[in-house]
Length: 110
Image: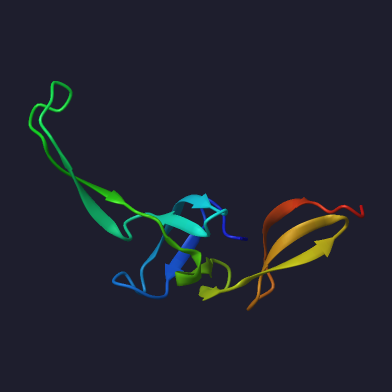
């Protein structure tokens, strides 16, 4: 998965369709992401000494990575990410405008 924590994404399906927000966390094993302000649920909290009033806590739940697209700030559009090999390092690249979005890691050949 090429989307990282801190990237801006656009939600493509679900109740929050069209929302642009920041990625809070990525779970690449299950292919899910937590996006700021998307897929919010309520967790009911019982009264305790730590939380004397109790109530409902709103939090974001993970959504599938297939439901979001990377939002490129240089071209201003949402697009997929590709990978290019340049001077022995893998780089993330916007598929629409070709701008580099950061390095992935060192390739095994170089």
